[in-house]
Image (cartoon, rainbow, N blue to C red):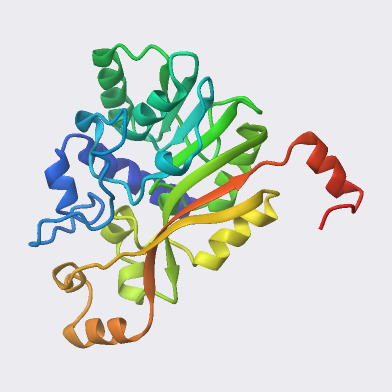
Length: 282
């Protein structure tokens, strides 16, 4: 438990620093962690510019996908954004849910909450509410959300099973989520796994892809679908901070893969849950 709290405090500190940085600084680093690359490009994130509701001031370049693009948000929905940062995904979700809907952003870092609230106030977004809290124990009542989105956040959380359980709790029956995250295929070198900077940089905290999907299934979700799957390539000038040249070569030949996936899953309706309780479901 103490180790988990130490990891959380590390993440809180790093993302407090990131909140004061601009997008260009974050994009030239490993998910904003400070393990900077001399090659200035975005290692993780996709381009939001084409999405309706996009606000560049709220985009810190910290994501690893476009979950709101796949989230099937409807007008009037209540949407929760886990790890809402400066408000980027929350504001796109607001565009989708409209004036009759509501968006709740939850973030662990006070500096991020402050930045997001200022961004919302500047735009007059009265139906977007940012709450400071731990997504392992969300400050939201049960059966609240129609849709949950999250972008490159669960990999930072030590107890991923607790987060999946919380997602299930706060979704309405029949609700669903679309989450972008970093997962692995194969084992990362020990030096990267243990590097605190890489943990805050979204890589070392990732778990195996199959384990990630199994966590979702075992917590009762249905219709689990990988909506997008792409390879993440970390450049040599970042890897060289942790590995020797021989280790980098061995890592590249090992078949280990770092993936960005966007996963969709639904919470059963009361009728579906009752059906499965009588063994009439496949």
